[in-house]
Length: 168
Image (cartoon, rainbow, N blue to C red; front, side):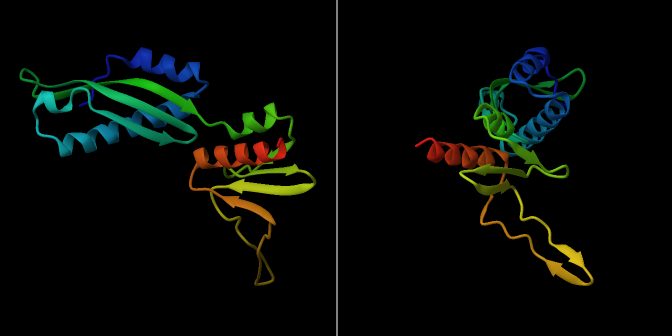
């Protein structure tokens, strides 16, 4: 069982960075899974796991955490683990484009972003856009300036690089 004493400070760290409640819930679940993986790798010796750190990437948030408590409660027979979030980095591609004054469109069903720079259209996404099927024929979307990234963090840095090239 993961017992979280630091829940309020963890929540505060995330909300200060603008992380919404759904993303926070996903982050908490992912940290718990990560701790369970660490627990399987370690012996039940407290000294081995207290201070253990990890980093997770959930949506557009990279979160560092540290295990602060790890012990077996003899009375309840429950393994108690606690962690604290030590750092949060949010990679907000939309905010990056807004701050640069660039108009863009987003996909309703995915993280894809569409924008123009120097009269060229760009598409940055985590996936290839699905083909349109019409009369049993597939029509592939063809973008001259398409960048496929493995996650939202990569999307952020790809857009940042485009903006740096644009600004010289």
